[in-house]
Image (cartoon, rainbow, N blue to C red):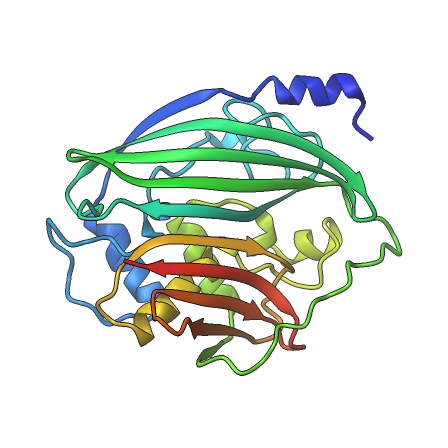
Amino acid sequence: MLDPSQIEHLQSWQGRRENALDDIAAGPVIAMNATMDIEADPPRAGTVLPELWHWLYFLPHQRQSDIGPDGHGKRGGFLPPVPLPRRMWAGGRLQWVAGNPLTVGQQVERRSHIVSVKHKAGRSGELVFVTVRHEMHNPQGLAVSEEHDIVYRAAAEPGETAPTPVAAGTGAAWQRDLQADPVLLFRYSALTFNGHRIHYDRSYVTGVEGYPGLIVHGPLIATLLVDLVHRHAPGRRLSAFEFRAVRPTFDIHPFRLNGQPSEDGNTVRLWGQDHEGFLTMQATATLA
């Protein structure tokens, strides 16, 4: 268990800031279209970046000697040095500024700060939640604001009881079935320069972290849910999106994406479910 002095030390990271610059290049867009199995014209200067594809930029670039045993950068630096070994992207909330999209060819500044560091302990074990706010500014000003939730968990204990799963529900107007094989997970990890071994190293994820298979990236599932909106509501842009990971999705079984638009068509309730029909991610998209 973390003692009060450790928790206080981690919470001293609240308010820390970091700025970065990146160019919205065409190469990642071409590669993401291929990974998402989207047939699209080659991007050129001015091509609008699809929602959530800004995650292809501002990537972590730790030197190989600064990588920890899980494939992430060593703890500390901008993010607090949480000593709990399991780290996951728990969810987020995003807003896009109307009339000012990110486009290919722009240089963008990302302004980040640590909003909160919270410690919790309960039946699911010891947890630390870190919330980071990012604001992306292009030459016209603020384009995207995002709050990103990261959760750190203790290592799995022998015989540990998994949380009770939640039924996903049925009757979605939109559905898509997918199989996230290791090639898809590798390609998305490469696109996002994500070295986390839970997504490609089967012996590590099963033997060290205690999961039954490779874990499908939470951001990838969120991106696929937004893609489901665009497949059924072509031409519509999003003004807001929020999502929360509920249960891991593994490469050893197929999974399903679901969408249910509201009666007025302004919002879409979205969710992912595993092969057993249990909820894995829930989200809401607000259409511009």
